Length: 438
Image 1: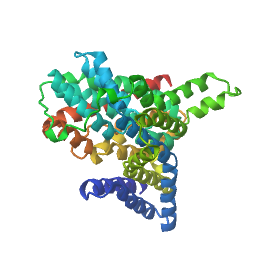
Image 2: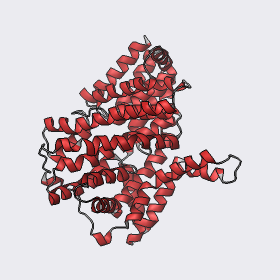
Image 3: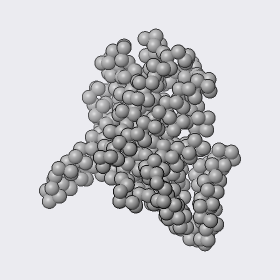
Image 4: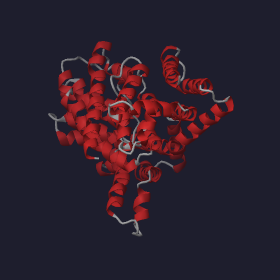
C-alpha cells in the first residue's frame, strides 16, 4: 500500500504540473495533503508535517539564496561579468575562444542563477560569433554547459544547497567534490562536443541581442571581478582545507571553521562586492539597497517550490512511506548512488524542472543516506547529475536555448538536450569514480 500511494503521489505531481499546468508549489501542497490523509494521518498532523518540512527546508536556504541573488545582481550591474568574459576571450585568442567562454560561464555561473548568467553572457556570445565568423553554437555551447553544470552540482545554487542540507552533507566538502566532478564534465559537455554542432545553423533573433554593454572604461578590473565572483568558493574551500589540517584546540580553528559557514561566506561575499563594485560607481547606498531588494523578488518562486518539495519529504517521513521505500531500495543490489541518479533522471524527464526533479528524488532516496557506507556529499552530486538529463519541451531552459539561438525543435534536441544528457552521464561517472576513493 505505501508503495502504491508513493507511485500515485509522484504521478499526481507530474500530472498537476505538466498536464493541468498547476503552479509547482501548489502541486506539492496538494500532493502532500493527499499522501498524508491516504496514509492515515489526521488533517492536523498532515498540516503540521507540511509546516515542519517547509520550515526545515527554508531555514538555511532563505539566507543563502537571498545573498546569492544579491551577489549575482551586483556582478551583472557593475559589469564584472562582462569584464571577466572580455579578459578571458582576449587572453585565449580566436582559436580557443570557446574555451574562454567556457571559463567565463564557469566563473560567472558559480554565484549566478542559470537564467541570470545566461541572459548576461549571451549578448557577448552573439557579438563574438558575429565578429569572428565562427559558428554560434560552437561558441555558445561551452558557456551554456558551464552554467548548467554549476546550476546542478555546486552550492550556493538552489538544488545542491537544499540537497546538502537535507542529506546532512558537509557544504564545503560538497563544493570541493562538486568542483572535481564539474571541471571535467564541463570540458566534455562544452569544448569537446561543441565542434559537432558547427554545421547546425543558429541565428540569434534581433529581439534577443541582450542588454546594452558597458564601455570598457566603466568596467571594474579583471582581478576584482574574478575575486568577487569566486569569493564564496574561495572562503568555503579555504575553510575546508584549513580545518582539515588544523587542530581543533587551535585558537584559530573557530575562525577558519566560521569562515566556511555558507551563510557567513555568502554575506562576506556580498559585502565585499557591494563596497568594491557597486559603490565604486558613485551610486548612493540607498539606491544600491533598493536594487538589491528587487533582486530578491526573482527567487521568491524558487524558494516556494523548494519549500514544497521539502514538505513532501517530511510527509513521506511522517507517514512511514520513506522508511518503507528505504527498505525496498536497500534490498536492491544496485548502488544507492546509481538508484538516486536514476530516480532523479526519470522525474526530470517527466517533469522538466531540474530543481523540482532533484528535490522530489531527494525525498524518495533520503533513507539511503542513513547507510554509513553512502557518502551524503556524493548523494547530493548524484541526484544533481540525474536531475539534468535530457531537458526537452517540458523544461523552460529548453525553450530559452531554442528561442535565443533561433533553432528548430529538432536542432534544439540535437544540441541542448544532447549536451544536458552528456552532463548527466559524465556527472554520474565522476560520482562513481570518486566513490572508489571515499
